Image (cartoon, rainbow, N blue to C red; front, side, top):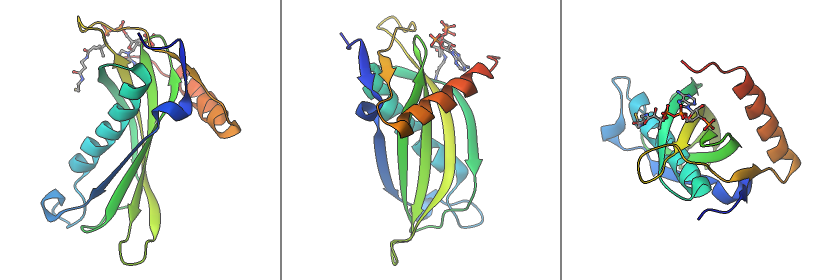
Length: 154
Ligand SMILES: CC(C)(COP(=O)(O)OP(=O)(O)OC[C@H]1O[C@@H](n2cnc3c(N)ncnc32)[C@H](O)[C@@H]1OP(=O)(O)O)[C@@H](O)C(=O)NCCC(=O)NCCS
């Protein structure tokens, strides 16, 4: 049985991938669909950790594409569970592109995703309460709570 609550820091995820030539779009930079798969995976890791069991992507709420990512770059994705409802989890994934020759790291994308924890029958199931411990975590929690208040489910 998962615990009653988990700290926000417990479920943080980090995924680093090398952008290979087969991942490019017609302009020669990282294809958006490849990036979305990585984003979904980084978010899933955070959601699975928090829920302590299987989860499903319910909604990809928003992705901001700020910059192109070149082939050969290292891409790092950081996922955090920012807010939880009863069975749902709001997750933010920040994407950073790193130039290997200089180590320069740029924040290129941000995505917001909702995952739902499911039980063995595939039905939504309760997740642990989320505990924001630091001022930065509390700010993330508050921003996600406000975002959810303004959200209308389709
Ligand atoms: C996600 C899924 C399990 C939700 O099932 P459901 O019967 O609609 O469940 P409920 O109405 O009880 O909602 C469960 C929770 O999910 C949330 N939710 C469901 N759809 C949502 C959406 N589109 N956006 C945001 N939250 C959503 C609800 O708000 C609720 O949150 P809460 O428990 O924290 O209050 C179901 O829609 C599903 O199986 N979808 C397919 C998911 C999938 O295949 N993903 C793989 C990639 S495409």
